[in-house]
Image (cartoon, rainbow, N blue to C red; front, side, top):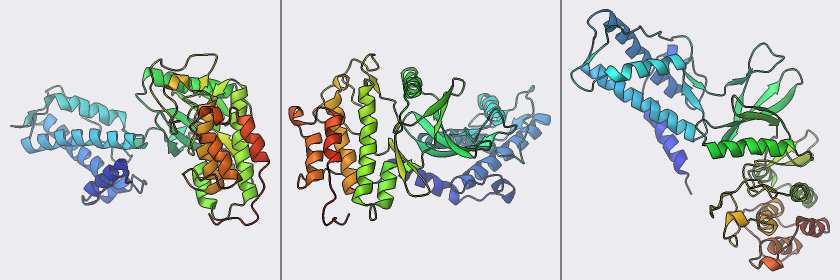
Length: 389
């Protein structure tokens, strides 16, 4: 099914592709996807600001057509940046230009021209630097005199994820930053996610390092890809033995959480990450603990609001989420690891029977602990003839 967001982004690109801009502005933006749009908008802003500065020194009258065009431009910029931010591309207009538009908006009139205030301070026109910037374009490290560039590698409901190469260690790290405007309860969940992860130390759980309360972000170990992407890319060549190792690492991670009194509650193919090593070995890492439930605390609203990518159809209230409901989500991950498909297979072989027992609607017939699932997966043997994925 077509993603509505992708359709909106495609329409936005088409809207600006037909509009010309000067090379002097295009050279400021090296973003192949949105650089042209930024250049078009930058030139239009500069044309208006230059004209307004001139009128502020002479008649103080800004022409009617120009006034209407600037009002439309302000609305367009707000709408375009809002759409980009919704799509995970955290772009903003630099502060001086944001302030300039705020100073212009009150006196702009849609008809008859506009009177530029007598005490209007000239706008500093920016010509040789970009005015549309990614909000998280760099990070400052204690031992580095210059900011280190960030690259966006993922985005979720509450946060964006970036990566950077630490020059001191030559190691790739990740930064998870809460989205701007995140509500109080969701921001509290984001902080609790860090606190929970900080208290865990296990090979199959992503490691976190430091929380920055000013930016509402934390640093974490970098993983190369998601489980969905890794299996999809390797599906035709991945051996049964490799699939079994991946499945067991995933299960060991979940079992560890349960022994710590934690329920993940948002297990999905996107929230299981994979570190890939040069020799081809992989290490599974559980991530995205925003919905984690500490059974000794109360993180959950009392109403029956259901969250998570995979939700057990037998679960009536999210506050009643238990191990057997987590086992249901495990079924879908195991199905993808072993079969390479995002659907539950029939119980026609040993793998299918394990998956069926994880997802069966009768809760009493399901596995009651992840340790039971592990025991059965450990006993699996490769089929004599491996089916084509």
